[in-house]
Image 1 (tube, one colour):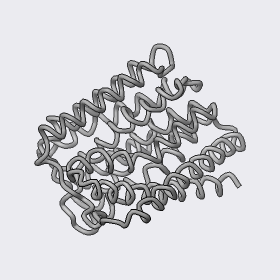
Image 2: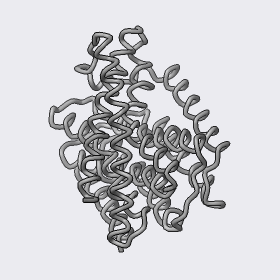
Image 3: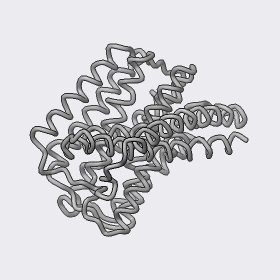
Length: 311
């Protein structure tokens, strides 16, 4: 029953995120917002909506380990699992913005999260505000200085919908995300109790992989279609959004306390390790390119993380 709740919840999150994305793009086109702004703000927030809704709902429901574990696990899944699988299917040419902007910002966000929670085990409201302010600064920087580096990866989504359809997609997307998050959290807590493991273990494995499904699907489809637009920058950007937007907004709504010491003693260090490892992999053995060997390393690291979490 718990597994069914998790599957239904994840399905609703994926469908709801897609509907919200359609509505967001349709609305921005109707308002004639520049595509560059849409891609970096509207689309990014829409694709991060599952993580955001799950974390906010979990924190409000009194399950802070799910709120924090979801983000830490999602960041690990984005780089270890999603990027690893993507690289097994094809080579990715890495843009120079990787070492100039994308990786330094992601690493800085990861280290800042570590510093905020490692001493007191809490992410409080003012720290959430700092995250959101930094997100705004990051977006403004991208919009001003990195316009040429942005590629529209989903031109087929650029559809000017009738206003009534936009409203329907927006409403259905919001309801699906809320319902999906409730089902997912209930299923995750139930599964943790049934198997006698902590909520944190379920959060950093099942929940985080589930909320990373949209990124995985988009990356695999792009590689199979041989689209050159797929870039490591998108996954690094998603990790920045997870920390600055998801945890930032959640902490502003309700402070996040960490109950399970495993999150601070183990999981967050794995997140920092995998985040750091992407840098040498990009330059070794060939500069600014990631291939199947790098994919094996990343998948191996992720498998190691899951193994140590479960045992």
